[in-house]
Image 1 (cartoon, rainbow, N blue to C red):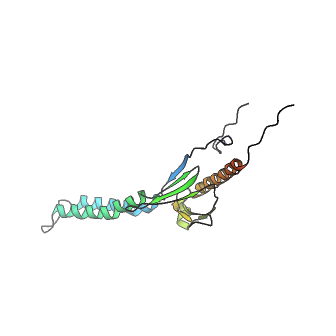
Image 2: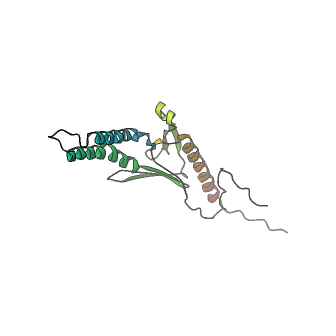
Image 3: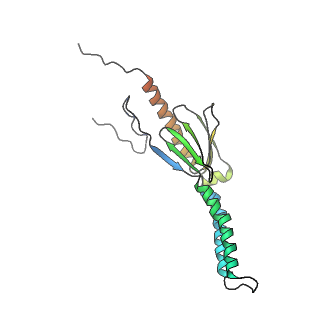
Length: 184
């Protein structure tokens, strides 16, 4: 008889004592809704440049318009996008990793095998978009906050499953190997 296949459920557990590779389960970024105003500014700047280019009064020139538009786009569109893009959350089969920082990189991680509590906080706007903030605390280290995570309930379920599987594997591997009875 073969082992049953899983259809969207948990993966099969490795054999006792077998090394388990660390696999990436998910890689997330904070919800992109914070880039809404940047998109509005980009459209408004493009419309203003299209309207005023070639129609400026004599003391102003087209290069001044283009320079001002480039400065506005750099400060209000490119910089917020770069800050958003530089922040990521990675969930693997062994740990949760938070990376962030545009100029100075910082990294925090929390292992599943130690266990931790998961708290989900959602404001009204986060509920509307399906996002939320997950707070992971193991009681020893500072809590790890995953802010504005898209599909927060699904990520919560994945984290609960990973903690459970890792604790089962750690408990099973800590037990002495059982000696099979020889037939007599």
